[in-house]
Image 1 (cartoon, rainbow, N blue to C red):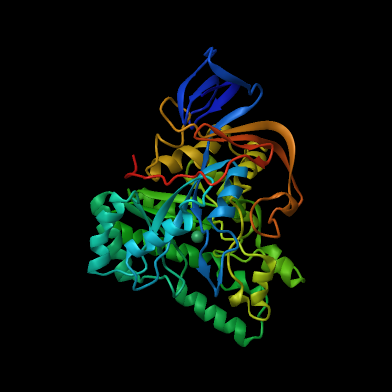
Image 2 (image 1 turned 180 degrees about the vertical axis):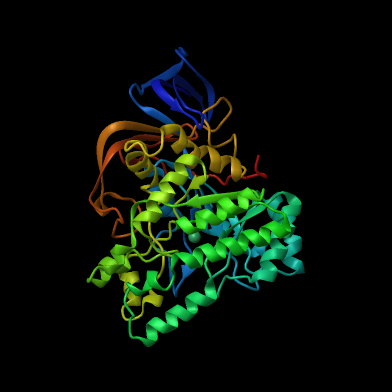
Length: 456
Ligand code: MN
């Protein structure tokens, strides 16, 4: 079966051009002006923008944290993803300390296989370093996992400088790299103890115990270790203007550094934690925490000028009832926000429609660069002959509204509740199948595992 998307504007990381797109089965057969194909079903997309399906390279579905499990699993999380134009997610497989990477990989396949409605891959978390795990790295590459994750904070997952360094070095031998959560763990612990001793146990203490400087300190420390290891590295969910300065300094030294941020750091700020109602404040708890207006402005500028390479979500959702676990102790609030459903339209409406970035840059941040960096290009990330027919049809002017009442994510709040968007996602195609039409999900759990290769 062939489909001809006619009259739209095709977006790539390089620009926007009027092009028709011919889809044959699961892949794109041709892209060009005034295509015709007598046996194709014609879909009129005039006046619409066609983006390559968005890739969210930072999700946590079906993850056990804080004595609970994220509200979204692969079934609900990938449906939410599709509604937001995300046709591929890369989730973090997360073996516990003492378990093998292979165990973590099989566990994540059991969570995702047969349940996912969009395509998916996994990064592998390294929270231990020993001879066995070192030997598993090539197996992971063979299994389609060229990217890894390490934590500089969280006792359950943090790996320590020696092992972080050794792992970075080993990954570098293969041309693989890791994304790293950068916050100074020890000083955060000290600040938390001080807040608790002072009886300040509400959500407002959360950002105070994780100040900007402690992200910048950890980013600087990681980048110096990467300098010695002589390897590239990715800073995930970067949130502060101080950390951007560390990145720029490392690049000045000649290092290769990739940076990801998330919509919550672009659009929300720490004043939300001051709300007198516990639930209103607790729903925004995440780490790193929401920051200041000045950080938001610095992050938008860094998206526009190329300092930041990707925008992912760190989707890690909990219901308001789950967030209640931290009443009386802010450190017990499960940390994380939903985001996989709203990222695309937020970047369009708050980014492109407001003139902060252009459509090509949005495509680079959400589709093309993640596909390249994470080794899924050109299968994903581009509208070109031979690529998977993952396409987002976006009406640039239709009004939309973000609200919890209209979301597929299994969570009873929306961090952007009531936000009116300029622009709306009208259709989403996953490998040639109409997956979403005007907000309705039209497919079942047909998502496939994406076997990734080293980045190119
Ligand atoms: Mn995360």
